[in-house]
Length: 214
Length: 62
Image (tube, rainbow over all chains, first blue to last red):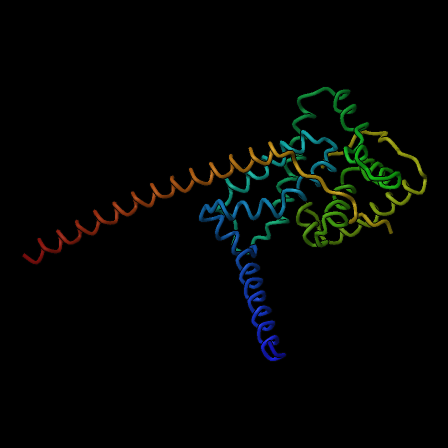
């Protein structure tokens, strides 16, 4: 085959790949997935699940510091998506929507436990819980980072998890936490400073006071 | 500034994933069936209304 034939073949291959890429990305945009979820399309649910389940679960494990509890909250989050599918607005961003539901479910769960159990039990559960990631950390510095992150108060930990770990924009994270963009930026800055202090101190601090549940 | 983006992620166990998918698929299918039934009733009601309107029009013209 001469160079012209080779060039034509390469161009056709590139155009085919481009067409497949464009088709896939258009097909799986948030707007399209919302539309398909409204039509109760199980394949659309699978696409959304595959896209977000690891991120949501990781977020919930770091937020709650409890793998089993995080799994229950994850399941409830997905069931909420299915139950509310027909009420989703066409411009809904699925990532922030799912993180909002997961966070609110965690807070509701905390509040329910506060009402059901004695202060001593809650204090023991919330104050001394290490991150499950500490056990599986690849090295000492990662273990210290996980421990320092887990020791932060909830309202700093959640914004750091959403923005610095999960990659949400500050505006999306503010929506998830139900606060203004300015308040989010302030929390983020203080959270980073507190994390740096705890890492610099080299200690693995345990919380001294009960977490404040917003 | 500490880079947190490189922290590892974790997945729920396979059993949990299977259970979540199954429950959500089942819920979606049941909702779809419910919608189909509602659509069926609406269609039947619209048909009845149309027949009644035609019957009335025929009576009036006769």
